[in-house]
Length: 98
Image (cartoon, rainbow, N blue to C red):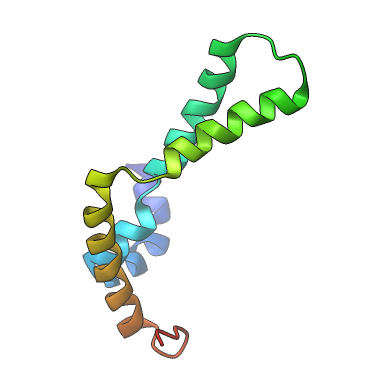
């Protein structure tokens, strides 16, 4: 409760944005997923013959995480279209949509 009260003045301006923008701002699922996956990937592989081999495994793990699955593409596109529309209304002087 103290944390909420201490941060309330920084949090309330966030509530002025519509839900589409708030979803984009607070969504950290991808970052959390990457942070959990990388240590697991290297731990499961054991030893690497070189630093380049380790980097290649990490690169492939990140690439797998950020490449959208076919079933997710329409959902993500719709989500970002709504957010972009709201961003263009709130920040029309900063956002060039053409």
